[in-house]
Length: 199
Image 1 (cartoon, one colour):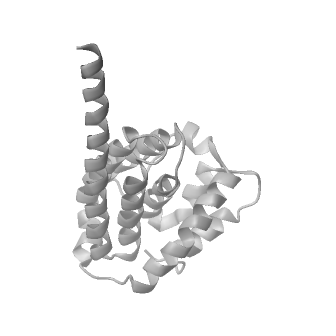
Image 2 (image 1 turned 90 degrees about the vertical axis):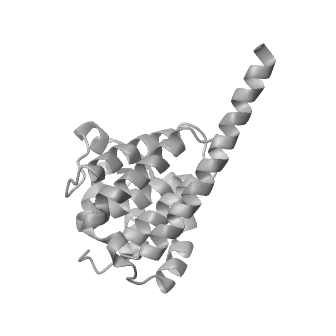
Image 3 (image 1 turned 120 degrees about the vertical axis):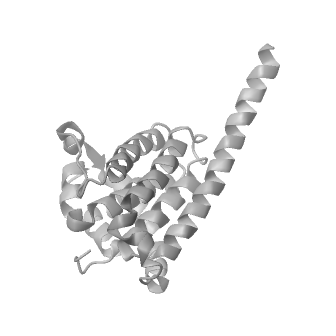
């Protein structure tokens, strides 16, 4: 965690990269030694807004892939070359960053190293499991708004990891649990409706 920039500064720098689209490889290169934590934040960001399919699905699948590597204790995330070559439209990235940065700055003002065991390297596999569960929740979340609590939870966990703030990680886990309950309720309602319709 040696970079002097905080999360908000790195997000603004990413949004300021030239071109109409930003390659995933450029984003990973910019994250340097905080690649895991900031990848988690970046993959959570689009889901903090009402987004149409397949954005939550794609973010959830990539996030699950990253989380599995955290679970295995890999030091730096590996992404396949085909994924690194893909790009994100600058308008989508800019809109997500513009929406997120003010909140990030407020969180950064109150964030500080505390309960640091939750943000340490030894906790990475445990956090990987937490993020994997949230990622799977994103994959099956209700369209347009169902992913918002989970996206917010993912961002809090990622920001807590960047700042080594265990309290933020705990708050993110609680938000994630609420989001999973909402997603489960939505899925139950859909299956109940189908069951009543056909049986």
